[in-house]
Image 1 (cartoon, rainbow, N blue to C red):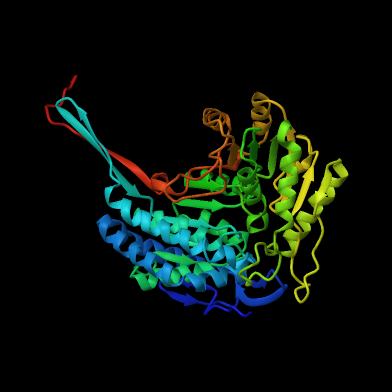
Image 2: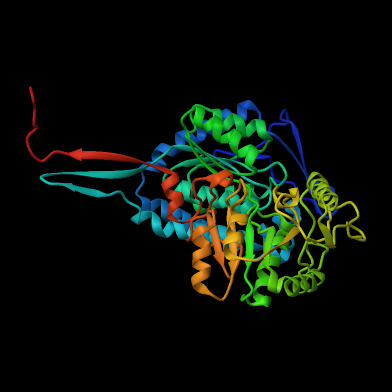
Amino acid sequence: MRAQPTASHYIDGEYVEDEAGATLQVVYPATGEVIATLHAATPALIERAVAAAKRAQGEWGALRPIERARILRRAHDLVRERNDEIARIESLDTGRAVSETMYVDAVSVAEALEFYSGVIASYNGQSISLGSSFAYTQREPLGVCVGIGAWNYPFQGAGWKSAPALAAGNAMVFKPSENSPLSALLLAEIYRDAGLPNGLFNVLQGFGNVGHALVAHPDTAKVSLTGSVPTGKKVLGLAGSMMKHGTMELGGKSPIIVFDDASIDNAASGVLMANFYSTGQICTNGTRVFLQRAIHDQMVEKITERTRNIKIGDPFDPSVTMGPLVSQAQQSKVRSYIDIGKEEGAVLHYGGGIPNMQGMEGGFWIEPTIFTQVTDNMRLAREEIFGPVMSILAFDTEEEVIARANDTEFGLAGGVFTQDIARGHRVAKRLEAGMVWINNYNLAPVEVPFGGVKSSGVGRECATAALDHYTQIKSVYVEADQVVSVF
């Protein structure tokens, strides 16, 4: 199960090591064994990476967009070719089942590269008629961008941030999460092999201090972070204090609303995918499940029946549908919330324990867990757990459930299940969320902008909206007549 990379960092087109950096051990979540040992970036490596990015960005930004697009398209082809290798590293790094990583991680990055290679040549400014004169706008790259990834989808995070950044003419220094640092190095190799000039995509490992140093560096212009709300507030505060751009994709406590006319089977599928996929470690997860009272008991029965069929086990067994949590710390956090739920008076309806995993006793396992009779003021219903813990709440009316769904500091996502399509649109319009699904959940096509409102973030990833956040507008006024002067 060893997964030791060539070196810890990738700077200016080559692997780089500096053992003076703090030790960073990579642990396989299914067994708890150390599979790689890396070192955090030292201040000297941070300077080296930013300098390389700054040097390379000028020429890259001056290229015609179609020339940048050709390299991204070649990178797309290489990501697809290396799908199985990427999936293996993702499963080792995160513990997610290979039944997920084989079909999601590399595929989503490949689609992002394909999308941005296709749209960047037509991503232009405006021409504005002003009578006898006119003005035009240009979209210009920001410069050196910092990407800070989350641990749940590390390869996707690196790709979703770098693809639009590079397409728009920027360079990027990417810091993966210390919990899942390996796959970003594979993306750096792929960019190199696709012909991306050295220095444009650099990977630095490390802890929070490395991210802080990159954001604070005078030669970086923007930070895109995926992470928790407290971390996002700190990072955006630092960036804002230096007048830098920021995109924050943060946490959530998203609602799923199931009306009594919904398809029971379809709604149950959406609810399970919104709570137990990736062992519940998805920021958009719909962990507050609102069931209209007339179908409450029937839905609970269906959800429970389907949950019993979840197969927990070796992430490399293709039949397994749920792996471990990413770390011991995350396992402890999830277990503490299960205890809190019981103490608060919610009913532990299913799961809540640690399964007996023969041969993998050192892993960070948890059972899929369902709480019923949850109320809005319970911590279960208010705080992000980031694990497979579902809270079921009953409701009576549309007006009531909208108010309750919006009664949260978060606003990342939401879901509505109903066969009344007018009601589906009506409720989606009123939910305070950046992403809402009607009769599905947790799909994130690259063509659709992705991000949150309220404490769940600012800015957007994916679609052409991401390009807006990796460029700045220059306006040029062209006078076609004489200057009118009062002097």
